Length: 303
Image (tube, rainbow, N blue to C red; front, side, top):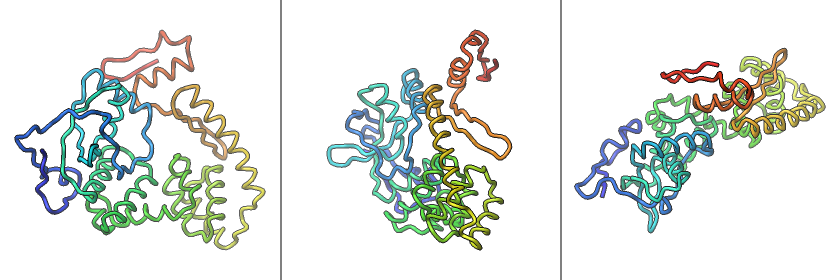
C-alpha cells in the first residue's frame, strides 16, 4: 500500500505528491473501472467530449501511460488525480485501469484536485473561483495560502472569489466564454442583480472592451436607468436567434461554435483540439475539397 509520510502541505502539485512513499507491497495495481468514482472535490464542471475521445483513442493505441491516484472509501475507490484518464478508459469499455492507492484526507484531496487542474488544464473563471471557495469551506485555508499553492497572487484569488457574488445568469455567461474576467469584474460595483444582468447582456451584445465596460458601469452608477429595459429586451431577443444558430452549427460540425457580435464586424469561432478534428471540420464544410486536405509529418496541416 502507498503511504503518505508528510505532515505539512507544500507549494504546488509536485510538493503535495513528492512525499508519497510507495512500499514494496504492490505499488501499482489494476483496479476495476466500475469500482472507481469521481473526486467529490473535482473543480472541473465540464469535460469536453472531443478531448476525452482523443484521449480514449490514445489509450486504445498506447495504453494508460500514467497510473491514476485513488484512495479507498469502504468498497469503492475515489479518484484523487486522473479523472480524464478514468473517463477515457470507461469510454473504451476497459475493465481495469492502473492506479496507485494513496492515503490522503479530504483537505489534501481537495488541494490536489484544484492544483492539478490549474497546472495541467484550463479551468474557466467560475470553475476556478468555485474551487477556491470549496477549498476554503472544506479546509479553512486562507486566501494567501491558496495563492502560494497555485502560484498566484492573493489579489488574484480574491478577485476570482468575488465572481461568485455575481448572479447565476452572469456566472453562466462567464462559463460559456461569452463574458470574460475583465468584462465581469466591474459588474460587481453595481447595486442590484437585475442591473448586473442587464449590463452583462448589453456588454455581450455590443462586445464592449473591459475599459468600455468600466465606463458603462460609471454611467449606470450615476443613472441606473441608462440602459432601458426595451433596449435590453431587444438585445435578448436577438440573442435567442444567435444561440439557436450556434446550437445548430455545433450539432452540424460536431464541435463548439460561438458567434461574436460586434459594432461593425462580427465573427464565427469554431473550436478544435487537434489536427484531425480540424480536418474533419474542413471536410464537413468543404466536402469536395477533401482530397486536397493533407497532413505534414510534423503535425502541421495545409489545405
